[in-house]
Picture 1 (cartoon, helix red, strand yellow):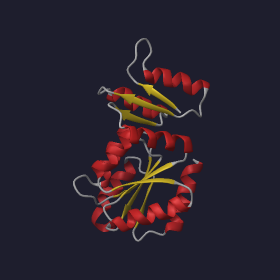
Picture 2 (picture 1 turned 120 degrees about the vertical axis):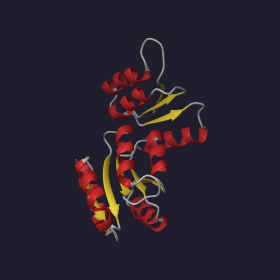
Picture 3 (picture 1 turned 60 degrees about the horizontal axis):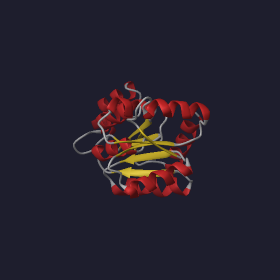
Length: 193
């Protein structure tokens, strides 16, 4: 695991990260910055940086990121305002060995994506403040490689949003109640790609 500052003299951290990736592709690089360097942050995440932390560093978050990086497992982010849905996902997926984080709101999901980009995003379409499509688009800006699956219990009500999400690159959508065997099969399908 490499902890790399983004803003450095001569060669910035993103350029150094690209060189490290050529030499050692499996090395997890966590970028850190005290500055608002959104273009460099987006570039680092698009290139495969493990995550980005802001200075001053929260040591607990840093240790958590290092532990996650050492595990090198796929990170799945589940965003749903229903606690039962979040807990079901977390219980089932963690039992299968996946690393899962959860968010209650779109804003929380976006913040988590800034700190550690997820590989797969399960996003409820109907959320307070930001809906699933708005949240997905914001996360896609941060992490263009994220693969998103929209989930909804209100398909008829959200059909237009689901269609727009599919047009914008969402992998697929699932209707609630969810069949967790289908969810696991979908994760396997996505991970093979």
